[in-house]
Each structure stands twice: as structure tokens, then as C-alpha cells.
Picture (cartoon, rainbow, N blue to C red):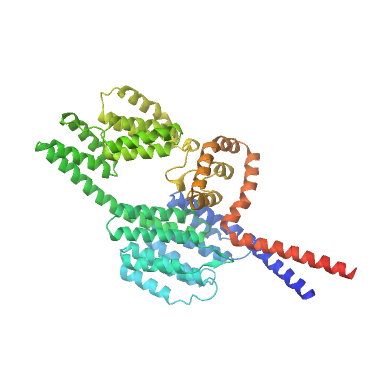
Length: 529
């Protein structure tokens, strides 16, 4: 009995050390890492690099693991320098990690950082050599699964940067297959979701669907950016490199296609084939990602449409979408109504009144930039239409609101339903409580919403009601410090549970150990009595 009591007390002491002492040990330098993360995710790469350098100059501190903190900041600064194109700086940070030869932040992270930099510069042989060095490291022991997964994942990024799609897919498959489990949970679940999106992107690239591949890379970047923990979150930088690469590639291809369609339309018009010219302008509008090309296509349609015999009307399929949208408008489900308008306009972009009505729906969501764009589309198609005066007045009315929107003052007005891109939309109450949408607590809650609420009907209903009801409450919380403190106190345990489930489990075990020890002591006291 005495031996069991000692064992339970020892377990309790160890768990207490894991939960409390480790958190205190990381408390100093982790603040710098969080600030660097915030700057990076806000797109301020130069600011992140400058802050990292200042942190390293002052010397990251902490009761324990301050040396590890220094290496983590070197790693983040190297990531920032990748995006800034400062490859000499990347080599400096990589060398610092390699020289340290730390077991807590192993040197292969430095070789991998240098390998990605060489891949970004087009040095395929140099990148391959760096990762061959990484592959020779003994990864057994502490953090074995994470080290193996990190190797395959980073080599996959490098291979994608050098267009080795087959090799990248094989690495991602290996990284996903590894078991990263701890205390019954997989702490790399977010990374696995992002890697799966990257495999989708590779699949799309293999069939030439570059725009869909780019969208998959964007989804992967969003998952990495909102993942809890610096080890997973820093990978969003590498995903950003891929987004940049394929965005440029896609833009070049789209520009060639758009210019070709507009040129063909003009040629058909010059030869008198107005019907074919009209069809090509419609195709240019539907397939274009450029507002300039869309404006030119609408201008061409507006000139040709009145001269065609018979004049194209509203196709039945497009009418079906517009009729269906009325029910969603009545329910004030504006995002769904706008989605149906977009489907109708892909079939009949020349239908001027649909652009006008879509602009008014966007106004209801306080999306003034998109509303203005849609209203201008209406004016291009119907400059002398019955609603032309109203359309122009609406544009004038929205101009000051556009200025507020650009300065960030209208964030709280944006969505009344589930946004089309939920991972970037606002968590109003949490943002008000913590003071920034980029706060790690808010990011954790946003990740939970995207992963576990928006993938089912009940969760989507809850999120829609939240967006409908929360803005006034968020306004009150934002303007009352006491309310902010209360909400933070209520949300923080939930955030810790979501971000660190294994620590929560450890706390649960500690509680069980305490209860068991108390029961044993009470029983022992009764026996002696």
C-alpha cells in the first residue's frame, strides 16, 4: 500500500512538472516566437526578420531551454529570409542551427532550411545533396516520428519548388503514413490535413488543372497558418512559397489565354461574325481571373448584344438559379443567394439586372468593394438602363465605406452568415476578447471551427447563428476591459484543451492520481482508526 502511494505521488509530481514547469520555462522566448509568427502571418516578412534579429541580439531567455529558443528564432528568421529572397541570410541561420548540434532542435533542420533555399534558387543538385545529408542522420530516440515526418515534408516542399511532382508526392505519402500519436492523440493532425491538400494539388498539376492546384496550395497554407504550435505553424511559410510559385505560373497562363480570347473575339468581329465574337467575349468573362479582362469582355458584349438577331435572352438554367436565390434572400442567407447569382452569371454574364441585384446583396454583407465592382459591371452593360442613375448613386454612397473597409474599421460588419472562405473570416467575440484576429488563441478557435463545425450541417447552423448574433456582443466586449477579461478567462481553458489535448489528458491523469492518493490515505487512516 505504501509503495503504491509513493508511485502515485511520483506520477503526480512528474505530471505537475510537465504542465507547470515546462510552461514557465518556455514563457520568455515563446513570446518572441509568437510575435514573429504574428508578423509573418500578417505578411510583414521584413518586420519578422527585423524582430528576429533584435531578439537574437538580446539573447532569448527562459528558465530552461533558452538555447532551444535561440535555434527556433534562427529557424523563423531563416523562413522569413526565404520569402524575402535573402539566401545569404538563410545560409547564416541554417549554419547557426547546424553548429549548435542540439538534441532538442536537431541540426538536420538547418540542412533542410538550406536545401529549400537552394531549391528556390533552382539548384536541384545542391538541394538534393542537402536532403541526402539529412537522410543520413539517426532519427531514432526522442522525437523520432516528428523528425522523420519533418524530413519527408520539407523535402516534398523542395521537390515541388523544382517541379519534381512524383518525388514530392512520394514524400508526402510517407509523412502522412507516420504515426505521431501521443497519449491517444495525433498531434500532427493539422499538418496531415495540409499535406493531403498538397497531394490534391499535385494530382491537379499532373492533369494540367493549375488553377485548382493553386487553390489546394492556398488551403494547405491556411491550415498550416492556423495550426497550433510553432513546429507546424512555421510550415505555412513553405506553403506560401508554393502559393507564390504557382500563382505566378497560373497568372502567366491565364494572361495568355485571356489575351488570346479577346484577340480572337476582335478578329471575329472584324470579319462580321458577331455571334462568334459574342461567344468568345462570354468565354473570356467566365474563364478570366482578371478584372480588367472581365471589364473588356463585358464592354464587348454590351456593344454586340443589341445587334444580334435573335438577341440572346436569359437561358432557362440561369433563370432557375435566379429564382432559387429568392428563397435564400427571404431567409437573409445572402452568401448562398450570391453563390446562385454567380452560377447564373457564368451562364449569362450579359444579363445586366443580375449584376445590379448581386451588388445589392453584397451591400447587405458590407462587401462594398465587390458590390462596387458588380454595380460597375451593370453600368458597362446598361449605361442608359432604367437603373443606371441608381447604380451610379450607390457607387457614390459606398465610396466612404470603402475607405473604412480598407482601413479595417468595418471588420465587424462583414458577414451575417457563413463566409465563403471561413478560414479567413472573423471570430468576432474571440477577436474582441484577445484584441487581434491574429492572436494564437483566436487562430486555435478558428481552426476548430473550420475542421469540426463547418464540415457538418449542425455545425454550419451554429456558425451561421453565431455570425448573425455575435457582432453586437463583440462590440460591447471590445469597449469594456472587464468584459474582455471575463471572456478571456472563459475561453482560455477551452483553447488550451483544443491546442494541447495531451496536456489536458495529463491534467486529467493528475486529477485521477490526486483523487486515488486521497482515497488511499483516507482508507489507511480508517484502517488505523
